Length: 158
Image (cartoon, rainbow, N blue to C red):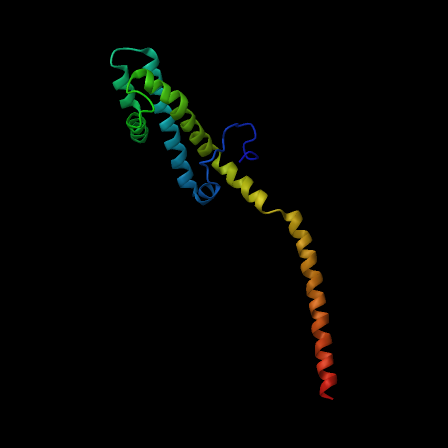
């Protein structure tokens, strides 16, 4: 992943599974990109609402979040990680949600490049050339050995 997008720090994390990225079709990649951008926009919108600090900012910011982000926020409240206040939500967005959404958007944006890089790295034609030479050498050796065994068999039968 680092080779596919060398100047995008923080692109890969412990939750990134390269096999999942490799299995996606172009349509799935496009859908993932749209969804990641929407989640990031919703998160940034909620953050902007909290930043303005108007009355009922907390409720408006929670409504601005996408459903999965709201569920994550609710779990944070239940686990007493953050208080159910505007400050708590702003802290949650700043420390957890925004970086997660940002990484997901980057990952979605660079999935085609990551796939191309992984396939390019996985298939190294210059190393296959060396294997091909060994294969040819072993084929010739096998043919000579087989020919010698057939001659020995023929000599025994006489």
